[in-house]
Image (tube, rainbow, N blue to C red; front, side, top):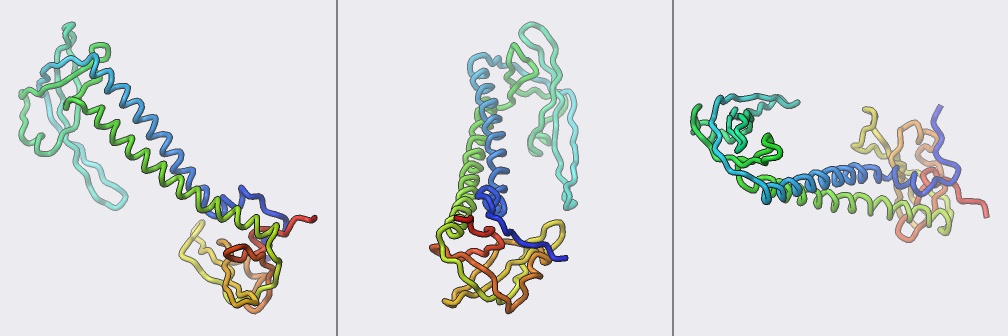
Length: 245
């Protein structure tokens, strides 16, 4: 049996989600997480500016790690095991990744400059200002994510408001179904379709995404109820029927 399209008024928030608004929240969550990371990095950078002690670390060992992604591409990471003494005489052993050139140019027993926090000697920098640079990069990424969130939120929100306004105030008219358009979108490995219609004025309209069985009740040549908005018409099967006065 074909699943029936909406008959009762569809809430604004549900229209927003159906129009892809939910994707914006992924970027919102990412922006929040990256902002928290940036704040943490900034706090550490401030601590290094105030407390960091410079010393010399000795390369005790060097090794590589190889990882393979889902496409089969391999990535090689280069590490040094290093030892250094704190100003209190404690012996520390730490690991850090380096570029391939630095890895090849440095041998076991060589020394490298290192900055550490006396209160947390396992917290260190191999390049002065590394935490400050990481904080800056994270802030830029967070800002970009925030802009993407606003864009992805704005358009579905505007479309959802337009659909609700058309349902409430637009002219309700009959339109002729001209085709079922198969899109490139797949959900649960099943293609999604749009109902396409033509109004009496000759203008074409398209529905939201639907599974094919939803549209079987509206074959090509049949008529469907649509609400005419300011810029486009909206299928009643998407917006739901107009609220009773």
